[in-house]
Length: 267
Image (cartoon, rainbow, N blue to C red; front, side):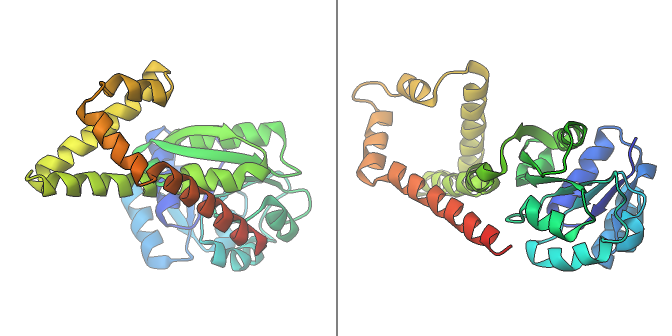
């Protein structure tokens, strides 16, 4: 198996590390960078993997995962420039960083894949959207897809769709958590204990999502099945329409995509 260097010990770096080990990837073939020494050493000790200075971690790795914050990317790329070997695959999970930006700061002809993951990767239910750089081979893309599939589902899209992917799936969990909060608060307002309301809402969301996936039905059809004429669901949906909740979601997601574009423009 290829040696994998994970540069960055944050949420996504940690999620990938734990997923790789659960999938059977040998701990001996994984190394973490020591950019954030305390958190890296903690992760390395917890999972039994090696850690090394950034340049050393990247040197000799078949796959280098860039899992730092966008603002830390210029420094990281400068540090590893001399360590990335010709056949190395570089995978970036940093929001708003284009493949062109990475290619311009890595050795010539480096294979680069840009990924927009999301936080449910922490529970192996992530959604990752991959886009290939100019020098990325089909083998590189297949390797990246296999790696990201360890913690969820994977889609391959042209890079021009990455802003939309950021707005829909990258930021998407925040919208779901927001709705969840609102539904729980409604339950409390109606007199339910908070723990009871939380269990009811979470299971309802999980069940509804499972129905969409397993039935293959369009959400509008599933909604109609719940909405008896003159019933409670219809009354609630009418109130949501009166408050233009659907339009608010469309506007919010467009705002997220626009912001993603602004961040990318900073390349």
